[in-house]
Length: 231
Image (cartoon, rainbow, N blue to C red; front, side):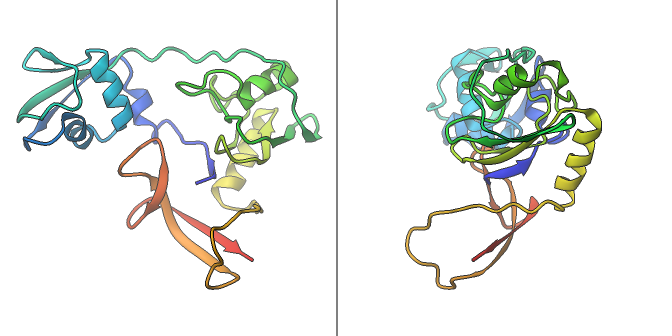
């Protein structure tokens, strides 16, 4: 999904688990260990699990396991999660295309290739870094230190308009509008081939991918309703 509201802490249990030891039983043997672990620990992405294996943070019966390609055996597996380092993005003098700005909010034309906020492997060069430099201390902090002022986000490779709050009141108001879908957004998209219907509506459910929890995907059950009209 290209544009979505920022997740709450309740949605992001993986980040909340920093510094803990998690244990789970694996009852199926013979499959790849990283796949078995991803099923036993659904709050951790497969990529995260592979990194934890490489760091020696996964063990079974006191034996450290490091290869996700190894075959899983039945038993109790323990993952020791390292403490989450506090995110402290620094202001960066990155040019921004400002479409509108007042004392309460700023509207930016985000270019393709810029991430909305810092994340593992992308700690600098984000919109948050640019906004911290552009706005200074006026950004709202409701979104947390990792993404001050950010109310919603666009995928890194998606260009488009984003709004950031400069006051807590503006952040609360904008978040409520996004949550109730009272903000309309228009995108220009390229298609491969011609749709059977030249206009229509896509009404489906979008949520965390069952195969890669760092991605969003269309789900048969659960998720959030997502409606897209195309013309």
